Length: 265
Length: 299
Image (cartoon, rainbow over all chains, first blue to last red; front, side, top):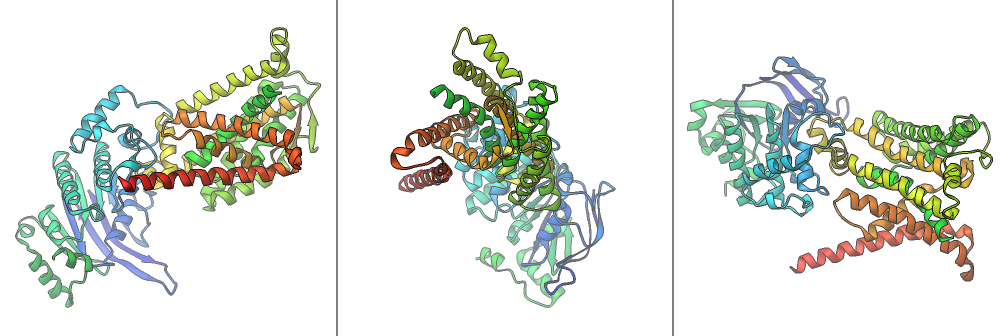
């Protein structure tokens, strides 16, 4: 479905700050895949997402979505079939607008015409969808999002993203800024939505046990390369210790990630 | 006399609504206003002198303002320079264009022409005094524009423009090109400013290239005065606040002009008053916000 062909990305080319962020990445994402991505700091995970979403145009290589070359399409065009959630819960919603306004904006992707679609039926539909979050948000349709907590806003972003049924969703550590209880809840919701709507998803996480627990495929990145691509039965058998061990034998160095070490207690 | 303040306040309210769109809804610092206002007046003058009449004058003033706003948006979008700089460029260029539109003169007298206002005055002058007639007329104009704006910002496009001022990434994530929304939003804002300029030329009886000098400050002051009293997430409350702010501002300026001399003030001090008014409004708003945060912390 999505195919990256020989993607290389260099930041600040031909300057002293030149940094090779991605090296010759080849990746094929199949329909229905739920891929978790782990890797040490600066491995290129977020850069990979930025390349797929179209925030950056790769220095070389091509990106295909359903066989169509989208390498030079701007981010807003690709956003019509790619949904993305950031680590920062504020990026997915507009703080100074009401909940129902936010939902209306996210209901359908693509150009917005000057027509009023927010009517009673639409509000009822939004309320019904909101009850799925079990956060009581359906009673707060007129409240500004600035009044909501980070967890509530991230849950909303997730729900609103799913409303438009994107072909691929990119989750960039979308629970990292939340407390453990909310993080667990958002992750459960993520899994529920992905299963119910058969979404194709890629999720960056710093938590190795999450990476193993969720999804059917796991990628490990290091220094701009995908060094491990495990799926199916093999992934099910994998353990955190096993992963670190495999990293060690592949790269001949310690797995360095302050945050993942913290989360392992 | 009092009616006069309100009439001027209502004419300027159209401009204030425009400023409200860019500064508040879109979070875009737009100084095009200083050029778009006299542009509207100049287009009106050219239409009257050219025999097109005032209705076409208003239509073209609206469209001229829209184009001026789109120019700013284009410069900002394509050259990737901040909105403030882009709008200063447009504003400066408009000065020359305005003089050309006025027929290579800095001002044009319009008193001898027939237009909408003279027609309104003649039709109702037997029943009501002149200023009251204008008051009712401009009240209706502002009401219609305000209601249309309220409706526009309830549509999908209007809501998305609102979201863009808050969170551009969100708009991109919804598959919308923010550049196009900026063209429309800043265009619409300056179209209202142009319309306001067109009406101002009719009411004042002349068009002058210096008409818009510093008008952005009075627009901003009005928006902020309105916000002192009306704060909400409902668009119709906010636009109402902008209109009230415009009337309040005109009233304050009027009293400054007429009674200021008791304390040694001259009309030249009015700009100083405008600036202080903005600083005062921002200070009050900030204090209220801090108060709110303290309360929340106590809970």
